[in-house]
Length: 123
Ligand SMILES: [Zn+2]
Image 1 (cartoon, helix red, strand yellow):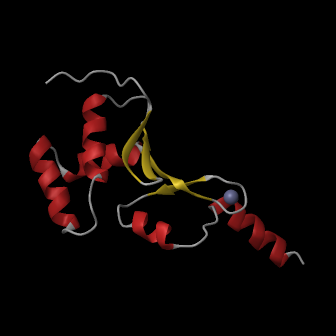
Image 2: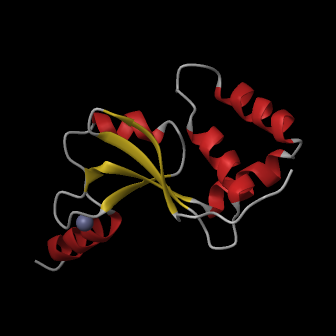
């Protein structure tokens, strides 16, 4: 299998209504790595997460460490969930984060949350 260089650094994993999950690849990642990340993030949160990870490792013939290394290098974020204050996109670390952040009526990014805490304690 040949691994081509990826054309676009940002890829949309799925889009339903106005909701989308996007992946931003690390510059060192190629099309094969992207495929692994896409498959990983395609998890629907309904089936067994461990089984999903194991199935991916079998499919690509890689260890779980290698899988998480690739997934960890690729920045995943929700394009439709934005910080209430600065508008920054919402990063996700785990597929379960997706329904969690979407279920919140408003989300505040780490930087704004920190600023607010500082403002609160300096009063
Ligand atoms: Zn913010």
